[in-house]
Length: 113
Image (cartoon, helix red, strand yellow):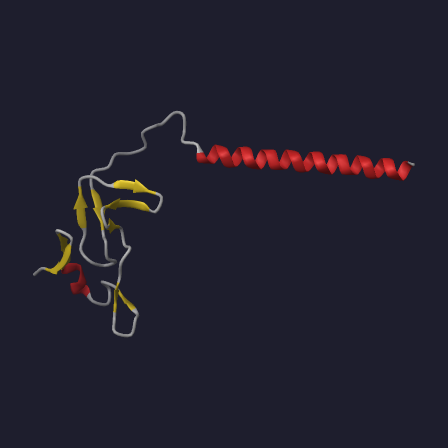
């Protein structure tokens, strides 16, 4: 009789602890997804600059859309494209400094001197 009471009490305690832990986990997860109720200013933007291709020229923008993957303006996103050589290895501006002279204009990339 005593053994069954102990097993019952243990099951109740473990079940209650699990229920409390799950409730806490769901509550904290929901809280993280909610935007803050009161906002505070932490800074001010002076420029919106993206580098669509890693190590190539910058593009200044007036507006951008906030998405789950980051900021974008149409097809322009920051560093989502890269230059590769004939062997498939990516190339950076450190290896080819002239890469920074390539700029974006009206949806096209062009080399400027």
